[in-house]
Length: 69
Picture 1 (cartoon, rainbow, N blue to C red):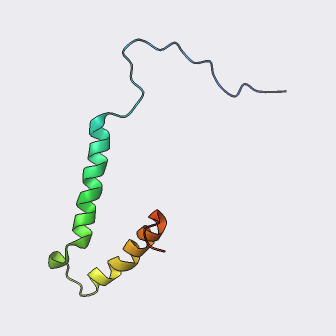
Picture 2: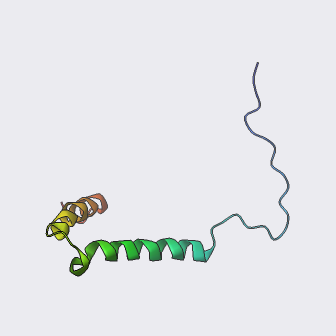
């Protein structure tokens, strides 16, 4: 016995949006930049090894993007 896997789609009303708003994307970008700035600010770090612990993360990101070989 087979089951219905999807429901029929309801007709869309005019004026309904399905995409992300511009402010949702901007908020994600601003929060990422703010977190990156907090991670890289050595003057506010209390541990001596904090900037050195960021190096492997940056190297991984560079390899992931394909900047470094």
